[in-house]
Image (tube, rainbow over all chains, first blue to last red; front, side):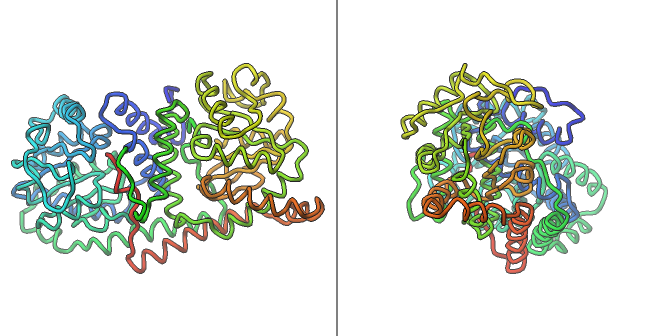
Length: 267
Length: 267
């Protein structure tokens, strides 16, 4: 995986993103399971055409409105998100006045501290949730996965959860929070349970979210509330699924084929 | 990833397969890129419903016929295949009188020897292609990826390549060989370039191939040739793509959702 990727390679961006994950693994930020999860994301992204779709843009607008109108907004960061988007996460936190909390599926103090350090170096002012800071518990989740920061996710009204797991999304929604998920799989439980789901690659979605928040900041809170109220997540997800379905139907007809990750499969 | 998987878990099989890959990584058989590739496979398998489809069964029949009618059949084995199906590969080799050759994208003597050892322990009589044995070259491929065994892939007429990369598939086809691919992504270059593509999970496909070969062994070589001649790979691939497309269309309509890998995402 250390081969140089030629910039003219048709899938250079996807391959670079993959290198970032591998690098994150070597730095103790990404887990083995995180690498496999990234592969799933690659497949779904490929089916989308590796582009931000119209339904994703609509969800991004609703998400930006929710973050700007939040009283206590939080961006929950796990290993893969940190490896792929630390700098953009730090910027989004500033624009939206959200706080950042490290929240892992497989907790380990080393990994929490490594992610916190990466985020601080990327420009984050403060990072919640590492080590003893995660002293609160969220209901209905087992073991270490329920641990959250009492100054962060526990008291937040809006939580952005890129690449989250379904159980935790559901538990947070049950606590009355607005949950914004970024998930390439529109069929996942996370996608289906969240308040707003952006079906897009975090590498594209977070910069787009920053840009949209900058724009909506100039609007009134009322106008943002209207955007939020008019958003229908189930409908939006159906549009995302239909997008992929239509793309497959077209491909099946023309016999076009997609080269997915084959150049550097390393099997 | 070392959590015990409860047997009643709806996705226990997929999670167990994932554990096998992780174990293979720890044993130096699977690469980091192999883990990501497995994730892509998980996503495509999920879209198929994690079941062997009718088009896959048809391709399996053609593949078994090709292997039985081969003069010099070879099963090419890489890290992921060895980790997931070593025992079945050894059995399939016996049934079909094929030889086994280790063939890696990222060659290293340690990995080749580890895979060879695993296959021998799983019951393989002889394993070609490790270390100096891979002294021949196939044309049109760069660097280490072109190395093959002069007693194996180089002189084979039929090569089974589970989880292969597209470049190598194409190069082998150009050498006049019949290539049987096992690839969950019907859109990949491997899938599109192979002579016969089984769109299925290797964990299901190889046992099914064994079973079908046992059955077709009782038939005449002529009958097997007829099965082979009547198989149309492009048509079969279109049927596989259409299968997934129809499944997505149904899901988009009913709002059903699929839980893919979320229980143990480890992000």
